[in-house]
Amino acid sequence: MILKDRDRKEVYIVKTARREIEGRPVLAVCYDFDRTLSPENMQDGYIRAVDYDVDSFWEESNRLAGDHCMDQNLAYMYKMLQSARGKEILNKERLKQYGGKVRLYDGIRGWFRRINAYGERRGILVEHYIISSGLREIIEGTAIAKDFTHIYASSFYYNEHGEPCWPAQVINYTNKTQFLFRIEKGILDINDNAVNDHFAEGELRVPFRNIVY
Image 1 (tube, rainbow, N blue to C red):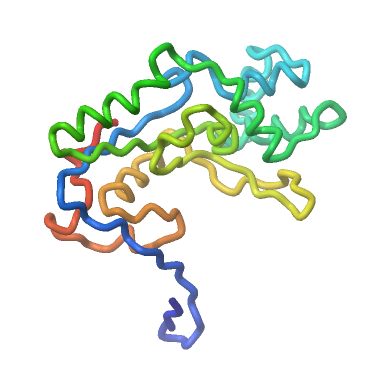
Image 2: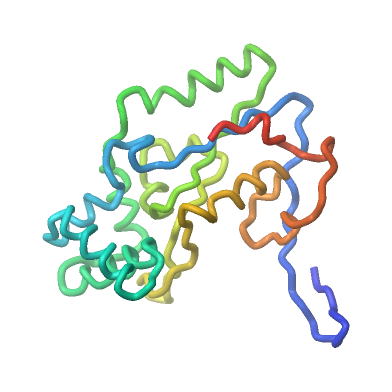
């Protein structure tokens, strides 16, 4: 869609289709990832692969953020790129491979099937969402990635050679709430500005009372 402002300059706005309101209640269960679905930080396997002590990596990353008034998540993403030089071929597929090695809590793999079936028996559609400061590329490589309706997480922009060269999305502790509004309104695309539109109560796909975080 193209809208024109008062100065006649063309403004491009991405509009995507809203998820349709179901004929039954929707329950959205939203998860962090690290220490919620996994007992460790998802980046730990990568950190060990580049011969870094895990605790030292996070200490240096947090110090970098503190010394430069930098978002902590931007700091760890920069640190990952920096530490890969000469040690690791870092690309999307490699990160997904690390995702396949992430440890999950006992019972997690069967949880989604069990709770979905529980909802079905009661006429409720259960959907699962990730809202994480970790890396989407790693999460997409895990055994449970297919169980999520949508994954909101930090990610890299990749150049024509498949190399990560800039953050594409950074999710920190305080901006996670915007994704709850997207789920509520059924507007999942992160570039769809319709999330700012007003919706009457009956137009909300998943009212906040139906969201578990």
